[in-house]
Length: 232
Ligand SMILES: Nc1ncnc2c1ncn2[C@@H]1O[C@H](COP(=O)(O)OP(=O)(O)O)[C@@H](O)[C@H]1O
Ligand SMILES: [Mg+2]
Image (cartoon, rainbow, N blue to C red; front, side):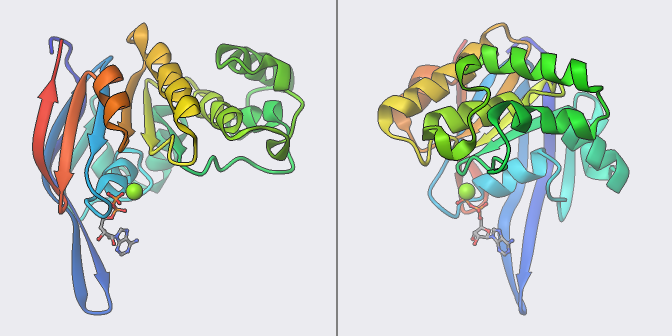
């Protein structure tokens, strides 16, 4: 791992309070992700994978510890800076594709560009280019209900990349897909990562895909890192 880390967490922790019971979802997670890597996060259900990804993506704030992304201290950002970070810093995709049902594929990809005030013509151009990049140019005018699961996830990937983040966070992106389509989606993430301009962190249970595509694997158990493996 020669590249400097794009992500560095130190003693990261997240505790949820349910009634008066404390749930330690994440404890003492110190983790570096080198720029341009494809990292997989694995672990049993409840081990803290989503908590970690949500913290990295700025969807949630830590109870303790720090998160640095691309030199910026995400864990210390105020609400406004966090909103900007979520918009431009880290793209996210999820198991449920979270597309807007009433909008076409193209319009879904355009949405983040609407929020960042890109003018209409440029929006359409960029959204079309992104759909092309994920192999969906021919489905631009379809609504989510008219698309397969794999196609919907491709739209979600294009949308996540709309504002040009250097980091893509994927939380069980193949959880709703059959094995062939899962391979296609993880293959797409690997392809986007290949030029190494996009760093990918993906939560996945699919050992064979993880082994095939991830450069680094981090294993969580009960909110703690219990193993890491890396290959060149
Ligand atoms: N919003 C929340 N409120 C309370 N407990 C939560 C919340 N989110 C997650 N947890 C708990 O934190 C632990 C880790 O959850 P999670 O990060 O979702 O695990 P994973 O994604 O690995 O299945 C679990 O015990 C879960 O019940
Ligand atoms: Mg989860």
